[in-house]
Length: 82
Image 1 (cartoon, helix red, strand yellow):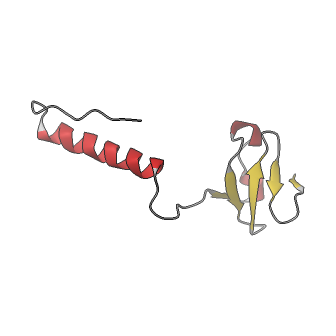
Image 2 (image 1 turned 45 degrees about the horizontal axis):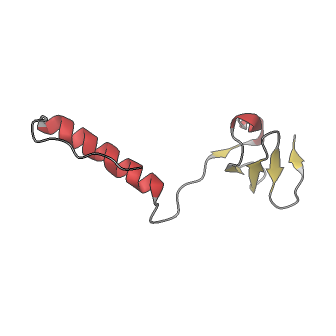
């Protein structure tokens, strides 16, 4: 995604906000370091269907899980987290 530069007539406060947005988007597109992982306990897991192909940490199980679009799947055993 290419972002257009801001024009010289923009107020400095607006330019600063737009630059912060630009920098945040650039960091998401090409992270330079590991990024924090979403964490939740088993009872607080969001619906897997709303987050297909995503990864999270299940804190009370101390395990990574991914969503297959239907269930959260444990990465250590491959079992469904109920």
